[in-house]
Length: 295
Image (cartoon, rainbow, N blue to C red):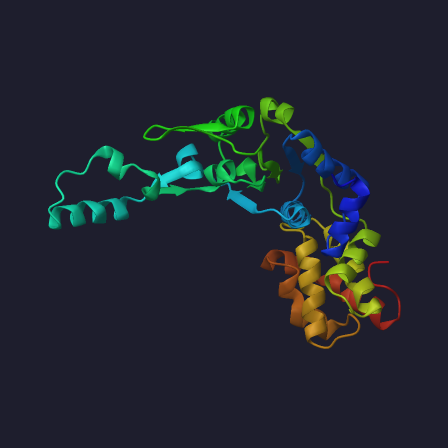
């Protein structure tokens, strides 16, 4: 079983910089078989942590994207009605006689959705239940039951028990408060924006060979932008996109033309771009004067 240090090294090799607390929390997911709730602002790497854990463990990642109105049926399974109708039609044309319910509601017509897929995996997958805060209370209650029993009932087929217990990661942007019952069921880790040093390390890990000056200037600029009351503060993904966009334009430092040309990579709302304009002008001036932007 990997130690927290092993996980940190494996994550870094895949371009993810995990601090001690996150590495320990992920290790406990594997060791204790308990779900982990990763909560924090959008864009801090919660989803990527689950993806990287799956790659590190050499197992499948199964992702359930939550949304308003998601119900248990949609997350578990559906019947392939189109194929069932074709089967009925073929039976009629072939003179095969009546088709029974057992024929129609059998495994070959069952379309497994993420939760059923996770239960039926031979090797424990990483089950990512993404943005669980976007689902409603009824779905949250269903999740509690599933996480306790690890079995589901398909009325036409009977009870299906988990072959192995998945490594479960739930993420939340805290758009609403989750129930105390769900929190008690899980381990918990608050994921914050990385420090400047951590984010600079992330840029170098994900963009090998990036110019050091450019990497520092972009990192410092993003941290300056996050200090503003933006509607959508830039996440780590935006930092990487911005740096990659500048690299693609052969930039080796941050300047006013480069900022204007690539602003859409880091700020995704027009209102934010207008609000940040004075700060961005100041960042460009600092860079031109030879000082690190945002320092």
